[in-house]
Image (cartoon, rainbow, N blue to C red):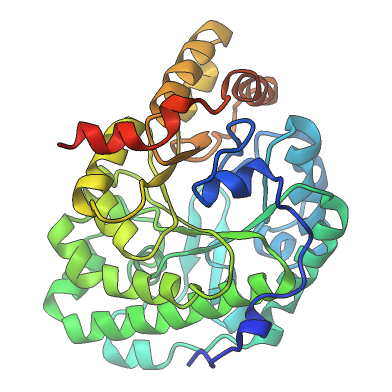
Length: 377
């Protein structure tokens, strides 16, 4: 189980990033410009990434501090984004703890012995701090090079990690996962409780090493109804995010196809809710306000369709302007894609988006959050 940690252990001495637009926006403040970063910005779209990763398996790369540091820094140098995100993978803590898995090119994570019974759950290993020491070292190396740019740490949410464990790999329909959830709810909750502990331990390690924000990726939560999400997933994501409440860093929560789950995802304890490209940011904000009218106006992240980056500069400019306008009608906006950068994306188009957001994404009186509340009445 995850041990209790003191506030001092959770919050190390940090760089003074009080002027960083990314952190100001994440905390509901008004930065001088809309901050922008991209999910999967450190990776396959960059030729420099492909060069340094050549012949090196993904998990080995994630656990080689110098390499993970270099890959994390590459998009900051090239694109001028407002935040770096640690180069890692959501299955790294499972692998580090001793689960027999591999990331197969063209497929994704593949689990040698899927978890499908109470005995399988009981046999799962517990993550020890020393097993992810290379990740902590990578974070320290990155911070030494980042200057005034914040660093985001991340982990996979319990449901999404469970789906890989139960299915044995990626799944289109999550049939084995949902079957276990409904047929053996006690086993299901025991599994997610174990994974919540593992995830919380991994994120605490990253925070102790110095990351400035964390993102919990629940990539496959959109496969669930709101009813099932609230019963089978929400308590465990809340355990993770709630366990970081005193860490002093913004907590982001993101899933794909989760338009109907956004209020519940905010209830899990997120400071910032990621929105994929299917739901306009202002519509997402209205849903979040309606679900919790007494809470501060929500901060959202997103949500340019990654495929638009293939459409040429005029189309990109039009979509960036639309999303910035929607973001001004929320309690705060961090510009991002609605999912990760696609592998064949032209890096110059990513750089152009950063330039556009920085040029045009200036805070205005329209974005004081009042408009969100008014639209829900």
